[in-house]
Length: 288
View 1: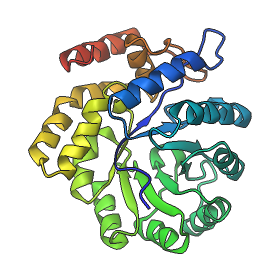
View 2: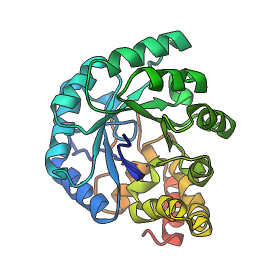
View 3: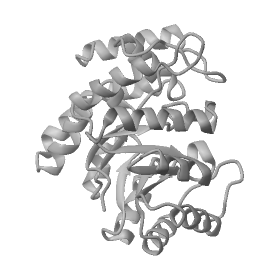
């Protein structure tokens, strides 16, 4: 029940000067992504600044994305609450990326109950999102597998713990019952080597074709070709995270002409010295 194989872009959300969503730029950016091989659009996630949006605004963005994509690739909507999950399904999303509850720091039992409740409330497939660096909560491998085996439409996990040992344990325990996507652009090839299906990627915002190729070359047996792409873009990847995501990604996409360099508070625009290093790395990688 894989939602996609390859590279899903964790899409940034273009804003206007008045901080409203720039839907014209959003549509142009979606077209750029699909035309350049992106395998899935992940809308209203961390990179999309969803935490700065009201639920109504998020659903408006999801609906606009679904309408413009028009079935060309799967649309996966970020959802950190049951209400959003239900509304995103009604808006036409093909799947959901559901982050662990944050601040409350749920126990493993709490995570089981949370994902079971969300999964049983919608019919579309769900990707669990494990990003303990942001949420303070880590989905342990045994917990993830238990959830997947008990809830039919929980089919995958975006693993952004950064712990390759944990991913290896997860892959061994899952034994194919759970698709694994990398949540870290600097660990795509290692995760694919453990049986991963792809990546949900920030890098794809600026290098969609190359990120797609990185995954597909590996899955087609060209491990060296995949590794060459991973290593070629390491400087860009590091610079995309030199400040908190999506600050650098927004500046990078702005340099490419697909949005303005505008982020909503409490995020602030990228420090110019960091931005120049990012831009130089993009030039050296052939992106600009």
